[in-house]
Image (cartoon, rainbow, N blue to C red; front, side, top):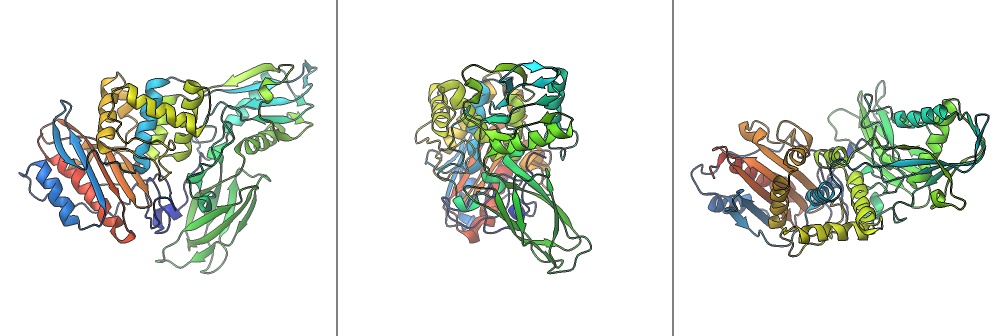
Length: 512
């Protein structure tokens, strides 16, 4: 369905989730991605409604009693600083890094930029048969899944459209192979700074120029009709022999915390699932796979057969196949997904895989190389060339999963202001989560009347919590803000979340 997330990210204290969940490890260790912060985080009543924001923020930080580094920077559209605590201190942003990535992408490539997947034949079509290979050349599209379909579980719907295109071209059989070419991006699929032991989790999915279903396989778990300690039932989507799936997930009694974890080899697709599932419940997770291009070709070959197109060859991967000599001939292209649509998914859902595809696309389109290094270099240059405060900025990836990313609260506020001023305000704001309304803030701020006036991008990895965006205050004026907490210990994680939410609410209650 476009990679749903593992339930372990909701309940785990051992895995960080840039969008929600709880975490324990140090920043450079276990990191996880984006999901809405737990709705159970309560927001305290305002400390002193009449107190100016600067002393109020300082007071809230003192009273929170967390042994961590806190950054708060808030500014009005006319550049009046409302609060500044470590606003220019270099901080690890977690998923607030996605604000920088998407701002660069929407500005440099434009909201209507289209991710293109191209199809080529290496021989003529004679009597309905393609005499040669069918080459699928990926263009970095992260949306080839069920995510944007009416039925999100229909993960191969797009591939059936591809099959229809071939049939429209009169192709009923293919004598050669289904060749996956992912050379639009480089072959560094897993970022070297990510936590290797979590490469089986969906939020650490490999990043390839040709990908399918977020480079994940979805698992539907069922505890219906089961007793505690029995093996949990499961089904895979799509059904494919590309992966070997091994489960030791068991049923847990009601009232027990449950979670599941996924491990993946660095060289094959043997996925092991561990953990548990509550009795009489169901859940849908996603686990990442190895070699997304070959995964795409394998599933596509199965879809072609199911749609009546006979494939004599087999699925293979060949980087550079689309530029073979002699040149293959173009059959058709697929370009349904726009940059704006992809950026909405990135910021609303804090989707790591999508953010990394966008970062590498920036590198390919603006620097001629679809790599982490080129993409992050383009992002850094974007900030500098657009007069965005960039002192200490260091982009290591597009999502914020890497613990080596560095920003300042001042920089994030500058980015938010820049995007409101560059003619993309409405489209940009539509990508931001909103309290009680959408995205990763939909379940935040329980019982807070001002929640709908809070827009913000969430962030969470090991030792880091963050929230940056714009609020409308009690006087109807806007305040841009960034709140980042670093150096957190496990015991202080929930306190940090409460502090962040308290400050955001106080901004909404204030009168600039």
